[in-house]
Image (cartoon, rainbow, N blue to C red; front, side, top):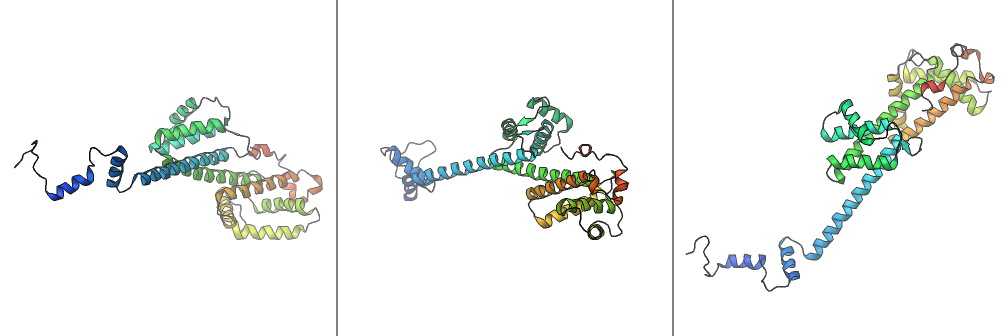
Length: 298
């Protein structure tokens, strides 16, 4: 019999010889042969392992490209005018939120101050190159791998789209709130849409038909009694209408942008004497309608 550490050369049982023969090639074997045996022991040959590495590299390249595309999309949501620059405050808020998602804690004002200091833009707009580098660095510092980074970016994009829709809906509400009292009245909706119709079809439109149409819309969609509605009620209605047109939130932002531009044009038409009527008088008496005060041109 032998003991641990023994150098006995007595014959091995058949089952152990077969294991040794499979797992340990002869010392005289060529390196490639030895590698092939080891690869075979793991369930693949050398060619299969190379192919597996190629697939992993391709998957990583695709994931990295996905991160790049999502960074581009996220930047465009912070640069709606397409000027190639995002406001510093928005970028700071975004990166602070990114860090909060990764660390599982809200960093608060102190976190934003730290991000602002690291960004070092002193209030100046942030270019895409700076945005991409800064956000990518923040991603890499806490997210392991492109798949994890994509998950964080996807959530940031979703949150930004929700925020953009909320901001644009409020802007549309404020433009239509002709007397600026924080409520949308039936008469405001009617008078504004008369101007929209005149801009589209000329001044000889059937104003009574327009009045009836938008009174019915107000009472069927906003308030059955025709009472003024709040921003919250208006927002629910608008988001429901957008969802019915297109479920894609990027498309919803584009549609809402067109509605805002149309509402701005209609509100400016109140200044044109040839488009004014007695029903406009309550709103004209309030003084000039300064759209820049509403943030309509932000």
